[in-house]
Amino acid sequence: MKRAYILIFAAILACACQKSPVDAVSGSYSFKNGGVLEILGNQPAVGEILPERDTVFKSSLVPESGQMKILPKAGDEIVITMNITGGNPVVFNGRLSDGRIVLSPVERTVSIMNELSILGTSIDTPVSVEGEGTIYGNTIIFEMQYNGTFKSGSTSCKILSSNVNCVATRNE
Image (cartoon, rainbow, N blue to C red; front, side):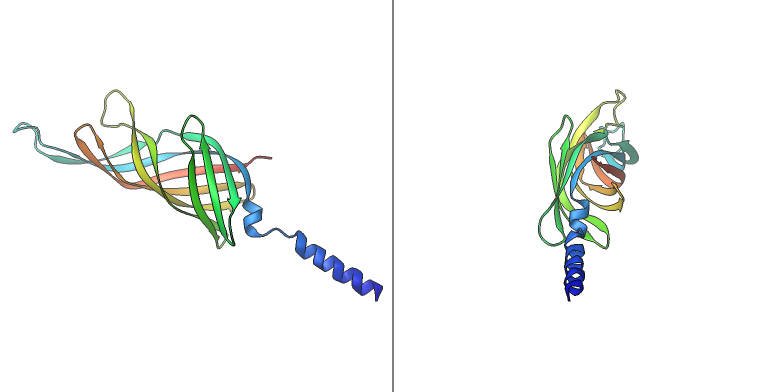
């Protein structure tokens, strides 16, 4: 009888010690993100000299890095905070689904290289960001989708597609 109690206690203890999927990814991370956006630029006509024209070009995001925290909410829901070095913080709501982290869309401002300028400057533009992350042990790789429109001088621009990754590594 005593042995049965010990086995039951050991089983309860083993179940209590297992981390939930949310608890397994919760914690502090260092991150870096960057990538390329494909943009459609519509340049207006300049009198009768230059006609209106559309141009598709690629523009790099100015890379960002900093500290990330993944915090549990309720059930499979999480909150991700990104404290960007030299920038504004970003907060995503997300959830775990089939071993992946799914981020809900959030509005934020990013800096992109101004490919329309010969000076190689960057411009700040509002975008909508969402994405999914795959968990590889202590590393999470997020594939991010950026959407939005903005102006660069007199050119109206629209983000057509994005190839942006955010790599987060757990702080030990």
